[in-house]
Length: 600
Image (cartoon, rainbow, N blue to C red; front, side, top):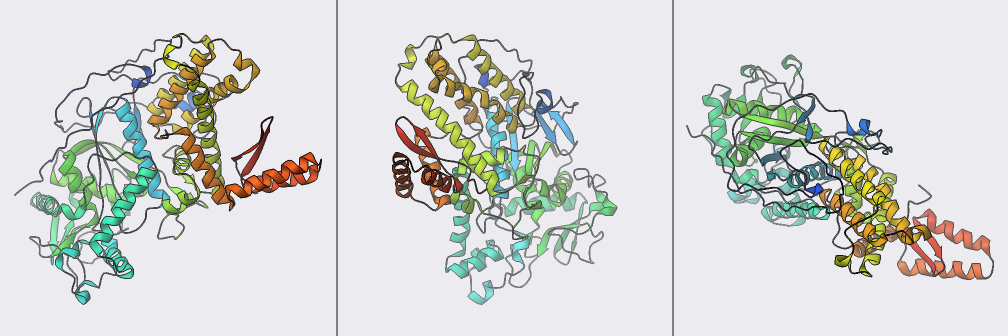
C-alpha cells in the first residue's frame, strides 16, 4: 500500500538586519544569536531531513510582563527586564510555555490551517495570520530557515449542504472541485465557479499584502491533493484505525487511546460536533469521517470506496505531511480549531504513521464583539475589507498585536481609533526624525553617542528580545517604544533637546533601533510621509469630510481668532475634534492631524 510521500521544499533564504549602536555587550547562552544585537549567523545550506523527535519541555520562565511590572496590554515600569536567551512558546498540548527546540538544527517546519476561499475574510482570520506572520518573522529574525505552509480549503463539508446546481446546469466534472457556496455565489454573480474560487484566493492574498503578512513558502489547495488524501486514508485503514460503511470511511476513535490529549476532553464526554454528522452507523458517536460517499448534487472524486469527497480533518493531515513530513515543529491556528479539527488531525496522522509528532501546537485567541466570538455563523463579523475601508491596514495590524495573541481581543471602533492614533504618532515622530537627518550627512556622523542614549537603546533591545522570546509578548514591545519615541521628539522639538551634544547621532541611532523593531513586527512602511498621508485620508473618510473642507474650517477659525471671536473659534475646534480632526496651532499657522474622536 502506497504511503504519503514527503515533498520537501527549499527553505527561504534569510535576510538579516542588525543594529550597530549598542555599546553594551550582551551575552546570549543560546547557540542561536539575535541579529537585533548585531551578531552574525553562519547559515547551513541544503534541504532539511526531518526526524521524529518528541517535543522538549521545561518549566516556564517568569513572564516578561510580570518581570518588568507590566500586563499583557499594560505599560512597562522603569525596571529593565532580563534578557531571555531562548525562545519560549506556549504549547497547547502541554498547557505551558516551553523552550523552542527545532527537530532539525537551524530549520523550522510550520503549518497553519488556512481559510476556506468562498468569500472575503473577516478580521478573525486577520488575527490568525497576523499572529503567525509575527512568529514567522521572528523565527527568521533569529536566523532560522522556515518552511511555512498555509493551505487553502476549496473542498469543505459544511459548504456542500446546499449544493444542488451541478446536474441542473450540466456543469462539467472539473467544476466539482468546488463547494456549494462557491457554486451558488458564482451563479449569483454570473461568474465561472473556478475563476471565482481562484479570485477569492487572490483576494485573501491581497488582504495579507495589505496587512504586511509575508507569503508562506507553500500554499497548497485541497483539490490538488486528492491522491495524497486517498493514500493517507488507505494507510489508516490498513493500520486498523478506520472502517468503511456503505462507501463512507470513519475513523474509529476507540482504537486511539490518546484521543482527547490536545483538548483535554475525555472520550466519554465527546459527541458529534462541528462538521461531524450524527450517524447511527458509527461504532462510536465521536467517530469522524475520513471519506464521505457522494450524494446527489454534491462534488465527488473517485476512490477505492467509491465516488465521494474527503472529510474536513484529513485534508490538513495529508497536506502537512506532504510538505513537512509526519513530524515537524509547529502546527498553528485559531483556538476554535483545538477541537475537533486539530484533535482529529493528531489521531489520523498518528494512525497513518506511528512516528507522527508535532512538537508545538500554537493557538491564538478569539476576536470578540460584545464578548461573543466573531464568526460568520453569528452574523457579527466584519470583513478585513470593511475595516480597512475606514482604517489603515497597519492600524488594524497594530490593533491585533496590541493584545497578547492568546488573549481574546474585543473589536470596537474605539480600539481601532486608538490604534490609528498611536500608529500616526509613531510614524509622525519617525518622519520628523527623518527630516532632521536628511539635513545632515549621516555617514560622516561620529560613532559615539551619549550614555543616556546608549542606555535607552539597550533597554529597548533587551525588552524587545526578552518580550518576543517570551511567547511573543508584543504589547510589552509597544509599551517599550514609548520612551525612545519621546526622546526623539524632545531632541527635535525642545530647546534642551536641540542643544544636546551628539544630538543628530542620537537621532540616527534611535530611529534605526525603532525601525528594526517595527520591521520585525511587520509595521515598517515603505515611506513615513506616504503612510501619514494615507492615515490622514482614512481619518477624513471616517469624519465624512474632505481636505478642502477642513482647510476652510481652519480659515474660518483663523478669521474668528483675528476678530477675537473666541467662542466661534472654540466651537470650530470642538466640531472638528468631535469627528477625529485635531487642530494644532503654531507660529507658522494651524495644521491638523487625525485623533480619537471626542464623541467616542
